Image 1 (cartoon, rainbow, N blue to C red):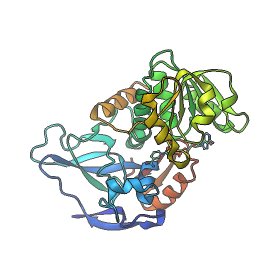
Image 2 (tube, rainbow, N blue to C red):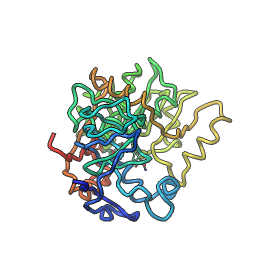
Image 3 (spheres, rainbow, N blue to C red):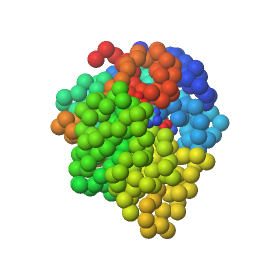
Image 4 (cartoon, helix red, strand yellow):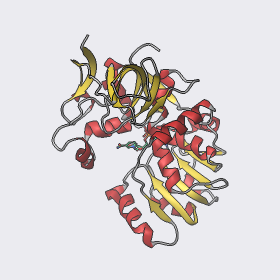
Length: 325
Ligand SMILES: NC(=O)c1ccc[n+]([C@@H]2O[C@H](COP(=O)([O-])OP(=O)(O)OC[C@H]3O[C@@H](n4cnc5c(N)ncnc54)[C@H](OP(=O)(O)O)[C@@H]3O)[C@@H](O)[C@H]2O)c1
């Protein structure tokens, strides 16, 4: 009863460093809730921390080996126990949320502070639909806000099918922007169904050759560069990428942006607040932003899920179902 199944990693490396083991079930402190995880995801954030491919991630997760040995930043589940001082949640509440400092959702149970970035499950979503609501969407939200997107702006999103890109298309429409999205020709209808006004198939045409000018070019898959996209920007247009770029150029270009008047690069540091989780719940409930789901895996097949995610070809999100829901 005091044990649970969890996918644990004790060293940085490829997907195979993650093993299914029995570990002690966490016990909530007085301000914490114990969540029985019904669904989680495997995403690029989990993969980035697991591989520590970018050394900088070790400053957060442990220099030589991971401090938190269970990954999984997105979750949806049921509150099973509450600490004595908890006032926001009660036993039986269905919740969802995001945590990339403690992680812990790749397990049957996790504990979080009641003030952490979580909220009650959207009324119209199952656990599996709600688990992928926050990772891609909070990056997209952060980047669109940094670019100060407003109604009437024109945005080009490169990679409208990724977790970030598919959320960015929907959130840009929510902000009232006109969206041109780039994806493979086989996904044109899917990306249109997310709300894109125009779609471009990258395997048929070079999107940097289009005649339109944009307030924001959001490279949601980090496959292009400021140099190539500059021509697409309006006079004061902004380029944001989800990747560092060659030799981390996007970071250096962004550091120079306060001294520039014209086209510039921004590289916002991502963050998520409780208000963001509540906004995403509201947008899900009103049908304005719903996560795109690709494949689903059971917990014990997490290694296969990582391999699939790391092909760079997932369409939206990869869900991990822990309890049939
Ligand atoms: N290190 C971290 O912590 C971290 C965290 C989050 C995100 N990121 C980065 O952010 C980026 C986006 O992540 P994500 O999870 O949203 O999605 P993702 O898994 O990287 O994106 C997959 C999608 O990209 C599309 N794609 C592949 N090549 C493309 C191209 N040349 N042009 C346009 N689309 C292309 C694929 O669809 P098609 O079939 O249409 O090609 C697929 O749907 C990734 O580069 C990821 O590494 C990093």
